[in-house]
Each structure stands twice: as C-alpha cells, then as structure tokens.
Image (tube, rainbow, N blue to C red; front, side, top):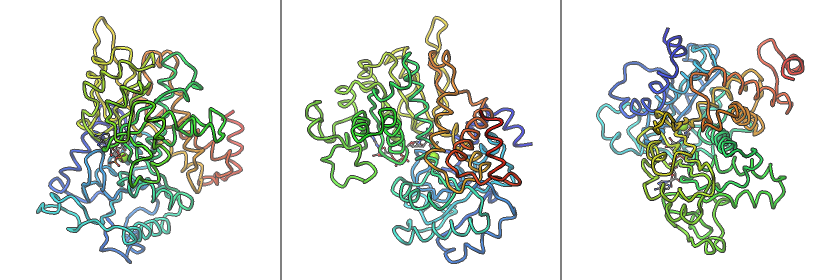
Length: 478
Ligand SMILES: NC(=O)C1=CN([C@@H]2O[C@H](COP(=O)(O)OP(=O)(O)OC[C@H]3O[C@@H](n4cnc5c(N)ncnc54)[C@H](O)[C@@H]3O)[C@@H](O)[C@H]2O)C=CC1
Ligand SMILES: CC(=O)C(=O)O
Ligand SMILES: [Mg+2]
C-alpha cells in the first residue's frame, strides 16, 4: 500500500521520501531509528562480509544503493545516518522504475565518521571512530563489492553520496568489472546535460549550438566535475572530437570552487579538476586571476549559464545575480542544483526578480513556480538526477549488460534531453513534471537497452537472451 500511495501521488510525496525531507531524516536518523531497513557493513566486519550477505532474506536483489555517508546531499558527513538517502533513492526505483520492493537493498558501509558532533552524540548508531582512509578504506569497499556480486551476480550497485575524494577513484576502480555507476558523478551529469541542451533550445537555437555556450560552474566536487566532463565531451563530439575540438570545448568552462577561480596556478590541484584549470595567459587577458571570486568571474565572462553544485546556500548573491543581467544569452540559464532546499545557491524568486523574467531556472530540490504578474509564470524546473538513475538502473537490468558504458549513459541523457516538446522548452520548461516519472523512466530504460544492444553488451534478462533482445530491437524500436 505504501508504494501504491507513493506511485499515485509521486509529486506530493517525492519531497518526503527524497530531497528535501530525506536530508532532515538523515540528520536526525539516530534519534528516529526504530528498525533496520537495510544492511550495515562496518569496518569491524572485515573478513565476514561474504557470509554476512547471506543474512539478507531475499534470494534475488536487483538494485543496491550504497553510501558511506561521507557527503549526504549538501549536508556533509552524516556517518551511518546517511542510510536514509539509500532508502529514499530505492523508493524512487520502485515508484519510477517498477522494481519489486523485495528486490532492493539499501546499504550503509560504516567506516566511521569525521563529524565530531555525531561522535559525541550518545544515540549515534555508527562506529565511534574517525573514518578509515587509504588502503584500509579500499579493502572494506573491495570486500563489500566481492561479497554482494558473489551472492547476486546480476545486481546493479549505485554508489551514492561518497565524498568526492573517493567518488571518482571508486568509479574508476569498479566500473569496468562490475555493474555499477556513481549517481552523483554520472546521473547528475546526464540530467545537467539535458537541462543545458534545453536552455540552448529555449533560446530558439538548435542543440548543435551548445559548444558556443559559456558556462560558469560553482563547485568542483563529484557532481560539478562530473557535469563539466560530460558537458565538455558532448561539446567536443559536436565539434568533431579532434584535439582542437576538445581544447575548444574546455575553454567554454570557468570553474570556481571554495578558493575561487581554478587556474593552472592552483597548488595541489586534483587530477580530475586539472583539465578545467584556466590557462594563466587567457585569465590575464580576461581581467581575471587565480582565485578570482564568483562575482568577478561572472562580471568578466558574462556567461550563458551559471551552474551551482557547491552545496553553499545563497552563493548566488544579489551581486552575482545582478552580474548575470549582462549574460550574452537571450535566455540566461541559472541552475541552483545543490540540495537540500537550504543549500540551493539561490531561490527561483531571487533569480527571476533580479536577473529578469526571461531566464531559464532549475533547482536540485523542488520549489514552486514564481508568479511573475500579468498571468505569466516563471517556471521552476527540478534539475535532479532522479530523472535519470531509475531509467539507467532499469535499462541495465533488462539489457543484462555486465557494465554500464559511457554510451549507455549518453543515450539516457539524450533521451531526457529530447523528451521535452519544442513549445514547452520555449516556455522555459526544460524538465518534465515529476508526475510523469514512470513514463520518462520507461523511455530512458528503453534507450539504455537499445544502446547496450548496439554496443554488443546486452546479454539478456531472465528467459530473454541476447538474440531475443536483438530481435525485439528490430521489431519494436525502429
Ligand atoms: N541536483 C542534483 O541532482 C544533484 C545535486 N548535488 C548537490 O551538489 C552539491 C555538491 O555535491 P559534491 O560535488 O559531491 O560535493 P563536494 O563537497 O565534493 O563539492 C562541493 C564543491 O563546491 C565548492 N565550494 C564550496 N564553497 C564554495 C564557494 N563559496 N564558491 C564556489 N564553490 C564552492 C567546493 O570547493 C567543492 O569543489 C551537494 O549539495 C549535492 O546535494 C549532487 C548530486 C546531484
Ligand atoms: C540528488 C543527489 O544525488 C544529491 O544531492 O546528492
Ligand atoms: Mg547524491
């Protein structure tokens, strides 16, 4: 009954099982705890995980969402309490993708927490120690992956809300051998691309004009750099994929983090961020410098898009939004994608009232549309990876692909990008309503299956083998 009510009233209840309320639940989880609703693997269980997985009562598990609680939404390290996010995401798998609720498994890997308040909290449920790091940390995650794939060889593991430091490393470590993906890096990127392409269409331009967009990105973590990489690859592909196309695509991005504009002069720059460090020569020419503030960057660049994945509420201040009035775009895009609501870089009211009624606005958590007067509405789109991850999971499951390729993720993003009709996009509506999430998820899953077949990755599902899928592809999809 719980899932029936959720499915029938998804628009009303998604903000409860998911952002923003799930954030509040995670913050207070130890005090709210009644019963375990998933599996907890802790650093103290090393050497035991292979037998522990058999404690789970379901013989079949299709989807696991796993977190180590190190970066829950924009709320930081919530330790073991982060399991709420795995539970919420899996509720959406059931509601949006129709996955059997008995075949989903929320997982918390408890390697400790560096949140001093939690360590001192008398009711804190997790290990009362600082986080493991380095090889010790990796050995715990390795053991977990081996254990779950031994019991359920066809399971799909979605990594969720791992701090950026580990998000990229774990993705590279497992993505070529296991059926897994990182939702914050890869899911968010696909949703952002769909929105960015929508913002190009909203200007009355063809999507192929995307490589001309100037993008200022606030936030260089797992989500921000995931978006920058995918957006850059999309631009480069549109420009022909040569060395110079990649170079030209990269030059469209100005990435600002907690220390300001990132340039080649930045000390100890992360390898994932390095490709987006601005060249010193260009920066000087643009009147900028290493560490220039967000407002300085927006004033000098006059970007088409201002995209926030910084986890800093109100980062898009009055000054920053005023600077966006000089954007070179006819429909400047302002994406305040950080979660939950309090961490949004700005509200839609602020964006529409300061920058103007012509903008395209998206936020990570739900906000109401803005009444602009005279019967016009400023549309608040929800730019959230919830539009993509259920379809990526369902498509991978049904295709039987042993890995989740870049092509499959790209197909998912393109499907979402083209889902919206021309007149909606021109009206500033770049993402569908959450009420149609089941239909979107179905379309995305089909696109993922098609791509898996194209790439010869599809091995089939249940009694439908690769050859049957191939036939289905010819009969139904074309
Ligand atoms: N809408 C969506 O679907 C998604 C939203 N997110 C949100 O994105 C946010 C960031 O997630 P991660 O990248 O994993 O976190 P993170 O903590 O790894 O990255 C945050 C980044 O923001 C930068 N930052 C901090 N203060 C800043 C400031 N004053 N100005 C500019 N940059 C600043 C940090 O230096 C860092 O590069 C979170 O709030 C999360 O909820 C994440 C995934 C999906
Ligand atoms: C939406 C999501 O995955 C996040 O905020 O981390
Ligand atoms: Mg997340």
